[in-house]
Image (cartoon, rainbow, N blue to C red; front, side, top):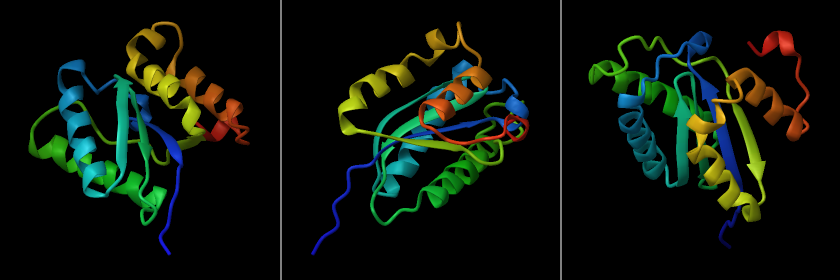
Length: 148
């Protein structure tokens, strides 16, 4: 018997201290590298987006991949990539932890559009406001004092 899953994830994490170090000129290169990590893990990438202080990844995980291990591999891999390729000179690392939210497959197109339009979206809403909104929309209990 084979394993079948249909779990659509939005993974969100920020730069360390929410520093605005992901400059636009290097983000596409960073996103492409993250896409390669996902492909190597047999995950299906739908979209990566973000702004200066955080990123969103929309993906379907391969059943043999644990979410926490994938995020760890992305963070470690991108830190090495950034350092060895001398991009994002002010980048000092990623935040501890991450947010991961699941969606019904029927929400996929709207989710992809949302992540694609991060620049426009964040002209009206800060990362802090967006992250709290995501937590609340997904009924995730949290203590705000531990978020930032």
